[in-house]
Amino acid sequence: MTRFWAILKKEFIQMRRDRLTISIMTVMPFIQLLIFGFAINTDVKHLPAVVYDQSLSQESREFLDSLTATEYYDIHYIADSYQEVNDRIQQGQAKVGVILPADYANRIKHGRSAQIQVIVDASDSTSAASAISAAQLVGQRKSQEILIQKLAANGLPIANTQAIDVRIRPWYNPDFVTAFFMVPGISGTILSLTMILLTSLAIVRERERGTLEQLIVTPLKSGELMVGKILPYVLVGYVQLTILLVTGIAIFDIPTQGSILLLYLLTGLFITASLGLGLLISNIAKNQMQGMLMSFFILLPSIMLSGFIFPRDSMPKIFYYLGTFIPLTYYLEIIRGILLKGLGISYLWPQIAALTAFTTIVLTISVAKFKKRLD
View 1: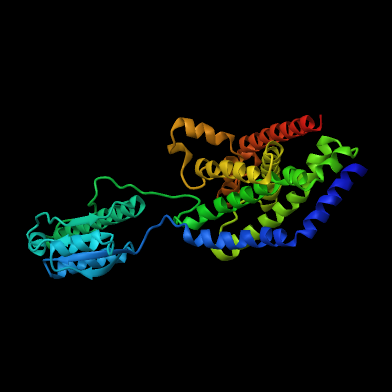
View 2 (view 1 turned 90 degrees about the vertical axis):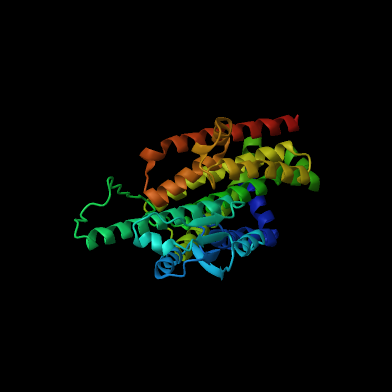
């Protein structure tokens, strides 16, 4: 224990001397969560639209009002021709073009189908999908309203105007707030990013500074050195988690359905797994530049394949299984499961087992790799 406390004290002294890094590690999570929490939003709304209304009737104005009421469309331009609609979309001034025919009102009054053309700039697939679904929903609602009005005018019963009544009950995030899904994911990503980067330079930094030889001649065992390198950053990780949770709850109103204590306990497992991975990189790299590049080589797949943004179930099988080797994959299920669903250990044991196995394997390889360097 004396040897272990000595290396632990040495790491804390080194961290205290590097005050800039400590400041960055504590301030950066808050700033990044604010930026990405507000910037990353899959609910694409207020798309600029150009309208060519050839009908100029009350019915056409009612349809356009229904479009803008969804908040997916903001009518910025009123066109006088098809060509102007095309020009606005081609120049990027509008993402959506809505064209109402001259006989729109006449067709509705006589009970005939009125066609409305909606041109969507699909170069941005996310915006296009939102625009298309909103237009289809408005069309369905207006059709139903017209049908009800016709039935009422003719004195016919209107108790059931739908053959199929689909009633949807969204659980856990009924208002589809993007921040509820993204902020926990951003928190896990920030933790993974900082923990891997910090420890990926630990051993290689000692080598470049010439202090590794001093550690080698000490009676420290390899395992003691590895644990001594990790523990100070575990504390830093918990500080970051606290900052992220307070920011998410206070600013983004993230729900906390489950046990915060359980989240802290399981986060320790994830932090250790990330630190162990960074330590393995540090044992392999020959200089700090290599350690940095190898870290980024791991971090980008972690973001893309972990389910942070894209659902893993929709990925090709090979990439789905590659995601199972990433610690962030399991932690995202833990943090989202606890905060949004209120899950307990009985539901999270597969993720706990995976993180435990990953941590054990990575730390074992790191210790073995460092022993080889001692020989």
